[in-house]
Length: 308
Length: 252
Image (cartoon, rainbow over all chains, first blue to last red):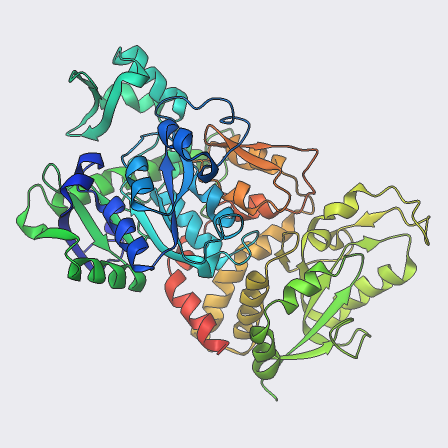
């Protein structure tokens, strides 16, 4: 096992056994099912997730409100929100492919939302933020010990909202409100319309729209999550799951015992960990080059390196 | 006990919020005092108030340079401490005392307040207003390991404290540091740590990036220090589970 996949205790290919839940899920419904189970068992009393316009209309008091979303939330714009029930979880399920600042609710979750055991889902960089908040809680009083389950998602890069808008409306020529699902897989960016139409864009097109901050990230598989998951490595409709921490191991074990997931050994599925490892190495190698480039960016002047 | 470290607490122009944050470790504070720390002097929590020779001194508040005693105290603190820790936004960056223009009873001539780093060399920064009980605890435990631990523990403590030592290179903080040091540098990835850590809700996330209401900002330095793209020492933070467990075990 190389360093590119981080430390993990176990790895499987899995999907939720809840057929209704899978209808709302991006792939194997891992995040939604794990949080639903943790809520039911009292392992968490709420979770911070990326919700959307429809969710915000139905549950306005559960969302992060600021001047940029108070009047209007665009379709497919993620809004960090607190969910306390399975119905709310389902309403927020699915990947949005643009920035949802979930960590911004981390302290508020323990304050106005009154949570003692917080669940949070996020990208690898957000898991880094969560762990930094636990070890160096500069402005995160009484937060670290309240984090009961942090689920990380595999991530190659993220997009600003306006990038997704341009990709969907200008490149894929679809209206944002008519999009049913977005997906990155098999080397393409896929946009599925509500009427059944499908547009695929080569990643060559999407690259220039990526958020620049992603290009210094050296983590593909959320090394610091309790449990990390993503579609890469598993067959369609399944997700690869890596159990990393003691907390993750305990929650995953209980969820398995309760019959929440069906699993296959990761060694038995195609394309398996080989592809995860390949993509992780690609990301890390590319971004290490970016970091090196930043060190000699100017004439005798460097851009800042956050890791030193 | 011989293997305790000696600690002092100098209180300058601060609101006692940092003292309260320290005390808010509750039982953890008692264990610290019981097993690891000999508190030599501290206004509010100890009988002894006068500055003495110590291993580590925490300083709360900025220095009023119109007050001779305050200037003498910060200099004496430096001279008598192996390690000086600036505790909280005022000691680190001036924080709310940056906004003073004097004219208050009963010392109307007191108008010039400096972060302690403008007058003495500071070793470690704990920013924030108030700093969190947990970070004060973590720094105290790490300072103990640095001075009394095994070789391995000393290395860990050094690695843990290094970013907080580097923060001491700069005596100014503002919410605009997020724009200058993170967004302008092409590093922001929109996690929202800054917005969560701001004690006065001056930061909101708009389209995944921080928007700083600078009229609200009190210059405590929490946001940019909490930002994972401010500093991120992967070798230490990736051991979060073991370090947290060790700290909790030490305070049992």
